[in-house]
Length: 266
Image (cartoon, rainbow, N blue to C red; front, top):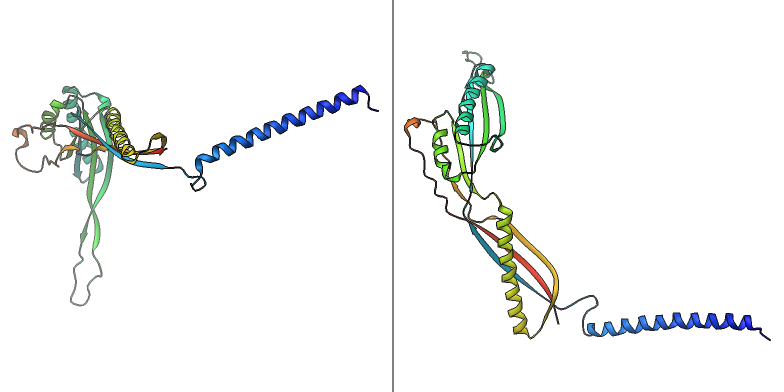
């Protein structure tokens, strides 16, 4: 016969077993209930709709970026470097006078390269050399500079002034926005609103309900109508000292965002 101690152990083990079995059955039942909502669907799939939205934000540019080059050529390295340095000194003094901060003047490239000439050797009645002779004729210096003009209405006067200082190449003026991320967010918010309205209309037409967002992607690029001046050349002939400053209409930049949203539906 079993004593009381053995009976208590048996009761304890039976209780533990029944508890584990109860939890197992509950979990199994819950899984079965959840599976009912996927009857008629392929395993691992849900019903979804995907919509795209487009949004735009228009803003007046508040910064002009002016890129130009200082070039010089000569027979000796020291001579061409001095020519370029003299022009650079005048340009920097002019920009400082116009209120341009040092942080807004950046050298993007500085190069010094030799220049060669090919001279064809003279032929004799009995012999002609196979090729010419390459001869060092001098050196070229090029310094590319980018200037950020925050007082955008002064950009035209600065472009005109640069043409009087020996700048040989002004490659372009780009009118942009200092806080472009803020404008891009505005365009994206408009695109999301557009996509949401399309999804709600589509759900109404289909007779279904939107539940939650399954996936989201956006293509939030820069301005689709970037405003900028065409290429301008200075110091290439003509009286640049008396040329009037160009007028640069600012207009607006348009930023566009395209988003794609996938909703789960019931």
